[in-house]
Length: 68
Image (cartoon, rainbow, N blue to C red; front, side, top):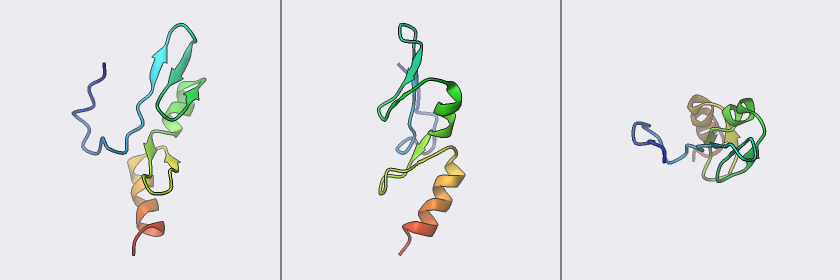
């Protein structure tokens, strides 16, 4: 399948696979029509289920909204 063992933070990573029959990208979260949509929704916050394009944005979101 895919090798996500090299990712340091693979718990929050939303990996999408291209389906050649439907010509769309499929992940656990949704079905995307273009690769730009996949890149915009790569990382997911486990508390509020929001999607982010980079790990840095996810980290900032967690410190601002979910820190105690």
